[in-house]
Length: 324
Ligand code: FPP
Ligand code: MG
Image (cartoon, rainbow, N blue to C red; front, side, top):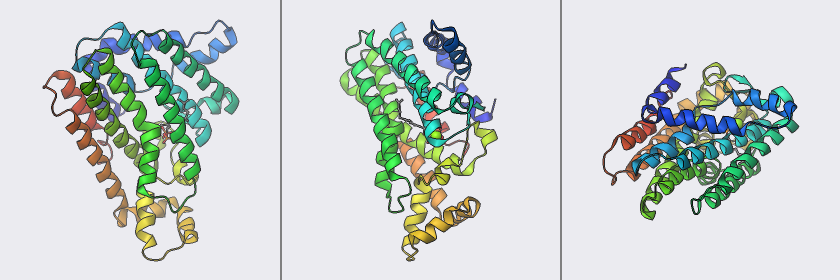
């Protein structure tokens, strides 16, 4: 197991037993009465990820009480939505590798991958429809919609050299922070926490999600596929400009560089990374991630100290561990 994953696991100590139950519920959702479909789903179900969002539901629920079956099911729902979104995302990004294995689109083609994503999404909403927790299904539905908006924005922003940081933050807020917020809020909601505490919990998730995506975007330019187990470099290849690139373009615009000069620079990613390092753009993005982590931790500052809070704070610090 890569050291980053081991570090993540150490924050899961409090919820090990419950995460096993979440995996069981998820596996149940990968069943189909059709044998052919079942065998494909079986392959997919072996590729479960780091379970970060379920862990957020569980730890945030533990902030305000014990974990019940409802929390386990909410955890499964957010992970199913996440998995569905990644199936679609890998088609969009033309990624061939996910979680160290060939992506679904690489194995079965784009059409099957999109439909499998739809299948998982439907299963998540079937579970949500059966929940008696008021407002939960609506929150999940709204969140899935926001994810789509984020991804649509990203698509609209492709190749736009005039993109600014506000555009970037609005996009990652939708495509990533929204599901983190939802996970943390659902945990608190299902524990019957007062509304303002649900909000606090959601706020923690929101900032954590922003930090998480900035870090993910940094890894896309800096890390190796072997280390991450997924296709990297797609952001630059597809002219999806993330924070360090936006910072670098904006810095260099002052020196009256034209779009075509920027375009030229993108053709040599190795050199571009070097230039982004020299201009401080990599450090800038890292600082932004750290700022979001501090905001996330600050959100929980008024809650009493307890083991779940300590695990959440530790998890937040871990988001950029392998980049610094
Ligand atoms: C990963 O981004 C992708 C997301 C965070 C969201 C993807 C959302 C959609 C495709 C919209 C469809 C939504 C649903 C609910 C089905 P990334 O490419 O930056 O991360 P990666 O490096 O892990 O690929
Ligand atoms: Mg991707």
